[in-house]
Amino acid sequence: MLHYIGYRVLQLIPLLIAISIIVFFIIQLPPGDFLSTYIQQLELSGTKVDAGTILNLQRQYGLDQPFIVQYLIWIKNIVVNGDLGRSFQWNQPVSEVLGGRLMLTMVISVVSLIFVWIVAIPIGIYSAVRQYSILDYVFTFIGFIGLAVPGFLIALVVLYFVFATTGVSLSGLFSPEYVDAPWSMAKVMDMLPRLVLPVVIIGMSGTAGLIRVMRGMLLDELSKQYVITARAKGVESKKLLFKYPVRMAINPLISTIGWTLPALISGEAIVSIVMNLPTTGPVLLRALMFQDMYLAGSFLLIVSVLTVVGTLISDILLAWLDPRIRFGGVAD
Image 1: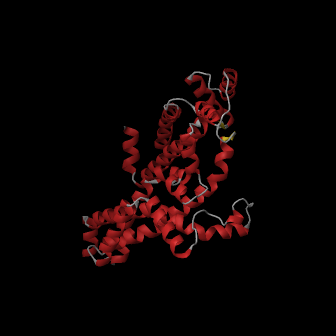
Image 2: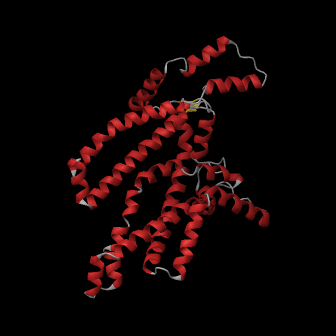
Image 3: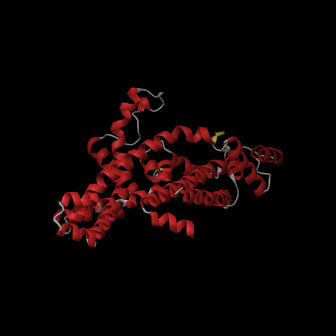
């Protein structure tokens, strides 16, 4: 097992280097840069920008350097100093821009993940055990709706309906008096009721998808020979169900850790914008729109690294559960 883990970790080093180069390259693909957008905004507001000012701004932001030099400076600061760079748009270190929003993003994402597991696993088990029952059809119908309808549309409909009928706005995570207030128990208690709607909306698509996966995997396990033999020998149905088939069918939860970790950080950007949530998603969208390359690049790099780490954790857990994976992985 240690050999397998070491082999997989060594594979990550060139992968992470390649990811960092690709991320930095993609951020600079659109024509122009943040400085071009900034100068255009100044000129539209009536402010004249001369060549000397432009040159000074280029040197200030390091935009006068070739691509490879900008990349090496950026990645060196990250690896050696833990410095993600400075956001042009916010005029603050990237760590400060993201830091205040990361906690709220992770709270919403973790609670949404727990909601998905608590709802999807029991429903998936029931739908498989009671295949083609009335409730199975109901859950299947709801699941298809959850997969087909985007979360931001559901958020828009719910916000409009509640506001039209009650006059109450459900957007945001805090009441107006707590938005800029320091953290306290009163602020936490104000946030908790407002977490329910974002958690349900963000978790709907994940719940619907996991129900279908859980149902399909469990149906496949229940049709295997070892289950049929155990039933023929008189093993109690509930004991048989949870001892082996459910344990095998729950493997997709492990294999999805690869995209679960980055989801904890990135959140649902469009849903966050619609519901006015102070998470990291809207910050990334603005950074991409204004070509704030260090903010956008650092964020995308964090998400990419978390995806790789999540995939590694998923592979290790699956290899621990199934020895064939680790022996096959080392052999390859």
